[in-house]
Figure (cartoon, helix red, strand yellow):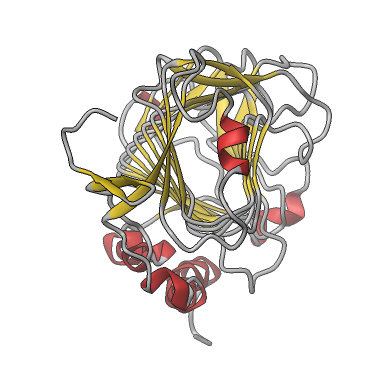
Length: 341
């Protein structure tokens, strides 16, 4: 590496951390012993015909140090709750039917750790087909979703707020076909995360920022990768700015509308970070993907440099991402697919 230029060294380091991350985020032995095809079913229904009327009550009913898949099926409705999934309750799936009619909402702001509508501290969590929103507004930090557990995945969710919408805090995470909306640093944190086919919508009327990835040290195996995503908005936005000096973000095969600022990236008024961040793009398209006016400290990756960053292996996903269960049980009764719950 002695003869590499600084840009090449950054790419080499970004690819190398994939190998480390695979070893670091392997699930515990308990995950391998769980039957992934069958889950305990808990129903949440505001009308009273389910097991619980509130989502938090359903989560509270799961035993500490849970060792079975638990599927909490949330019937359509607007649930005005501030929800926490505790660290000692792994292997929970929280699922609506579709995000348009299954809404979790709260109104709190001012503190990035205390304001979230939904906080996930547990490992091996799955969220499906939910809207998760914080309606606090534009006057400060107001997190809709905080993800601080390891091996968490979200499918088809809508995550809505203004500032710090998604606190992608710590752990390895996967987001698929999610809609994420905000204005200021609306995807932030220090997780190692892959966003695949997600829609990122900026509601900033001036120069907001989509990401504020918080990586303070070169030794940290974290970063955000956006693969096959779409960026839209109403004003102008940067692709990212560095919360930490070694902030790391890549957009690949992503459609960028004209809302993306021509410079692309912002150094958050700290030029010293320009030499340590890893901000890159690969085969993006659309009017906002024009790199002719990009800042010189961002990178346009080659195919060889991008390849190791463009699979689920970058989060160790092949060892922990799980399909939806194919059967459910209530007590000792197995409910076959297609049966009425």
